[in-house]
Image 1 (tube, rainbow, N blue to C red):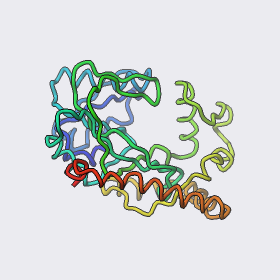
Image 2: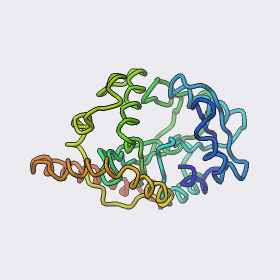
Image 3: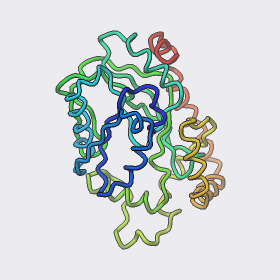
Image 4: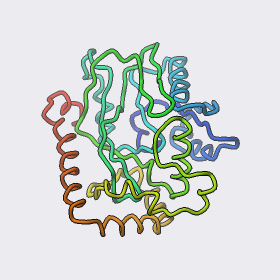
Length: 272
């Protein structure tokens, strides 16, 4: 993630709420932002996702850090086009407060995704902005317009090892999110195929290119998670023709949705 935004951000503010000692500390320090003293790490304990994001907003305000904020989670990776987009934000009329892109939501491997969803990438900072909601939070206080660009980047939050995925599901459930939740006693041994059964029928084959910034990490994880990825491949390949036909239509619909942003002259001007 950090490498993919190294050319667009003057500094990065991270809320690292992992227990001490943080498993992320070395990675953060070794990043270009860490080496160039452009990294600010806040160690506030986790209570909710909105609280973590609000800590970063507060630090940004204290630093008078700049007009535009790039919003990105640790499991998201941008492509090279984001640099052109960031460089053109000053062309956006004052009436606009947010710039959205779209994300592939990868699941179960790096060869399948469940959907392409609209996602905020940049917002214009002003005092009084705040995030609300323990999970699937939203930013309050943006009074201006939003524009969506014909640009898609990667979200890898659901490509975890199955146990970690199940633990993440338990964590989200504790914050009020719905979902298939395993009990603590089930985490050591559970039927992965049955656990992911509700999601498999929605998987769409990825035929694009992953962001270059993720290449080294993906190569390592493809090896480490090869058995889990093989299960996903087997299940999808043996699905009935009806499911495959429906997913062909879904994939086409997602593609048309984000590509339609090309019809906006302003969106084309920003996206390049």
